[in-house]
Length: 316
Image (tube, one colour):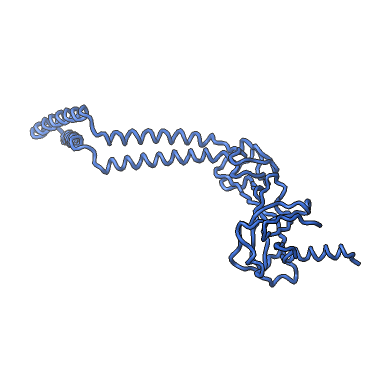
């Protein structure tokens, strides 16, 4: 048979599990589970893991190096891309600048010589003193020399310059992409947090999208509770709240409401009782500063929403 104190504790626990009012003035109480922001890091480039800087449980700051993937092949590709950019840039500048006077003078001289050779071939062919093949060859050279001279006089076509510009842009984009791959070979922490999963070892070969790490952002932590419709009017964004965990039953972790669902739902299975399955509730998220990482993902916790400025300490 339960003692009076044991019976009171059982009633209080049942009330907390059902997400009902705690009976304290100005308080709404409910239970839930501590949640944190978790970020999964996948490989953006393939290769061999040449450096592993962390292990599970390591605390990291945003930007800390977690691992490095070999870039020797990418370095070769980068040098080739840089050479392609240099060649494309030189060609574009050449077309943009146009022809030099020296080029035109040389073309005029070549045309004069080709024309002289062609006229001589005409005379010899008329006297049957030259094979037809040699005459045709002289005629072709004369035509090419004239076309070259005419092109130098008129300059490059705008379409040719645009094409060279496009080739330069493409070569530059390819170089930039390779530089990004090299940058992505260094896996860094996206947030302050703790390494909660490590899926690689130094020397492993990874492919693009291979899972590498999971980082949990433990500060701040969140507690999602569910409030019945009857109490929803008492809940507001920014409302102060206290969170309690079993390890410190009388120590409040102050927080505030940062989210209130606008859509009713049935009580989630992980917090409902058999008799509670048909109740409609609204999700309420409490954000709690957690600089010491005391609150950990998966911990059961109780949340109390305060309607006044008071911050009572729960007695058990």
